[in-house]
Length: 128
Image (cartoon, rainbow, N blue to C red):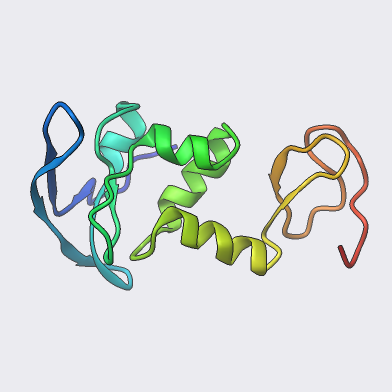
């Protein structure tokens, strides 16, 4: 996946324990955030996102963990967060039917306009 042209919005530096030592948010999308595409794509544990309403520092590893260890979903989530926490975006996806968990294999998948689980091939029942 290509790095965005802006590469970084704001500044976030942390100490060895992951505590913020410097944070400067800038306006992007719908809010004031820190977001670093290069850190997300090149460094597993570097700060890459701080949402508007929290001082929680997220790394690529955090996004991947939240997304059932699936890089494609984590990359989409990182690209789409623009003010909210990743877990808030995940809730929005669930509510809007953009993500689901297969009843057969238990794996998460992007479900918009999908009729079979991409992991096990199980057909998805309408209206679940």
